[in-house]
Length: 361
Image (cartoon, rainbow, N blue to C red):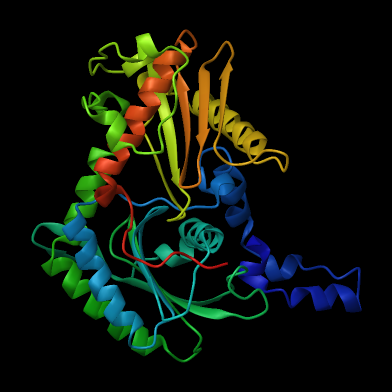
């Protein structure tokens, strides 16, 4: 699919006419794009969840960004996407246009790994903040949207991390999209969205040490989505908020309805790239086993090895993957997972893009 982003499915016709066709010249200079994608399988849950993640932001900040993107979409833009690195700030599609998370992953990888999109034409200072004026216009294909045709992407970096992608079907829409970008930029500056984005980058996302203690009425708050404990007596024991509650090291929460996920920051116990890669590979294996054709919904899985305890919980609405200290006991791990789910429900306005219609594919 990453090849299709660059060449579209029409490259198949070249092979049909000549099986010895060499497409290397057509992919010249894109080695880094594919290297980046391969590397992402070791650190980006989007590659196996087929979902995207959002940059943590106050609800009002995200709404301000979404409102101006909606105005842009109404003016003839097919998709308007505001990103910070690989995380979504806000995105809007034209009416009846749906964007698959896989296309978002491939498009973001293509943009972030291509130095040509980052080339700076000029810089300026405003309120002690540095802004870039780089802009590009490039044909791209979204394989899940339409693998046989190009769209045209206007890409603008506001700073080293934050960029805007405006996609259209028109090859001569550059100046219209440039005008749209100017409108977006004015609103983002006026609403302090860009400064809030940088603040969010510094603060990071969810930390397991911030997990709040469960409320006394927690069981009723979670409704039908409550993970049962093997030890009811132990389940009722108080569990104070400590740096790693019940030995929790890390978790990934995937909202099935929203096609979005949130992943906690890595703790000191998983600080090296090798440790992080090992955990993501364990998550991938867990995900694959839970989605085996012979396994239905509302399933749980508990694994223990020398590295950690893994607990997976799959429901119709969400999936939770959690890693604990290898000495963590099952009942405490279950209790902590219930707390994680409640916590995410309490702060979902900050970590998810809400209000948009679900993707339809």
